[in-house]
Length: 100
Image (cartoon, rainbow, N blue to C red):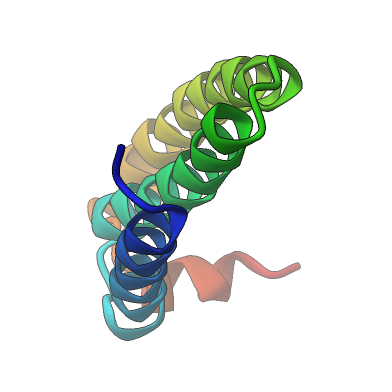
């Protein structure tokens, strides 16, 4: 069996890559992909600890997090399509000009 520390290290690396992508990029689609990478890093921790402690609750939490993140992506992409139709760009800097 693979030690839990390997999963923690992999999850930390994935989370850092996702956080850097969300902070440094200006494209909204790349930011959404970075957020999904961060969610999956957290899911990996839940599954690793659930397998280590022989509990089912961590895997159930992962199921709900995946369902919620799928709906978040659907709503986010619908918003991006609406913004693209009005601005002809999905640059995050131009979206901030929508403030009323």
